[in-house]
Image (cartoon, rainbow, N blue to C red; front, side, top):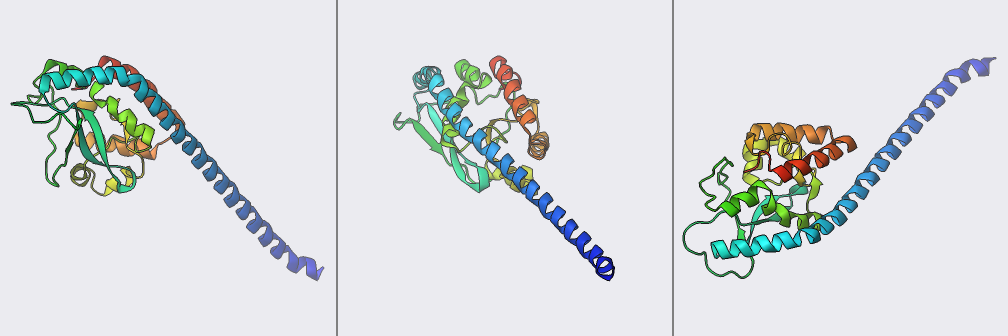
Amino acid sequence: MLKTHHGGPWIYSQLVQSAAVRSISILSEDARSVAKFWSAVALMERFAGLLLFVLSLPVLIAAAIAIVTLSRRTPLIAHQRVGQGGMIIWVYKLRTMWSGPSGGALWPLVEYLRAPDIDCITPKKMNDPRITNRFAAICRRLSIDELPQFWHVARGEMALVGPRPLTRYELNAYYGNAAAIVLKKKPGLSGLWQISGRSRLSYAQRRRLDLFMIRKWSVALYCRILIVTIPRVLIGKDAW
């Protein structure tokens, strides 16, 4: 009887510890399963990015030829952006802004624009005077200028869904301490603020929506953003 009396608490303690270990093990397995799932999604995105890049090549090439003819400049530009984990990436776009005489040689096809670490970002606005050509305005409205970014998805530098790639200045000036949270995810072609107002939104609204998307990240939210993006791009809603 004495052994039973003293053994009871010991057995109870062992059972509690065993249950705790099993709970931790289950949680660890769940976390690993979630990580494996999103790794598989990332791999599928890379294949999708490559496929979409190849399929968009006819439109991309035709638009590039038109831009060279109209601007007498390189058809592509590249801006420095901060990617996942703080990695610097050069993000490609079709040129949609030019004025004055030709900028010089057309080769290589990309002009790399290195932004200084100062306030160099001019917010987008409707009827932007920097967009002096109707064809360029159409490219921006229908996001044709962003077709080269499918290549970044294929390379694994960007995702189909995620916070948009930002400059270091934008992160410091508008995201502050929240920049570390945003940089945990790959930058994406589309995101929550792109389907919730896009060019109409202020930086404060974009920041709030980016953080909400990351904190509430789920399969349902990911799929919703992808599905809603397609018609919004096709009609050019809130884009300029």
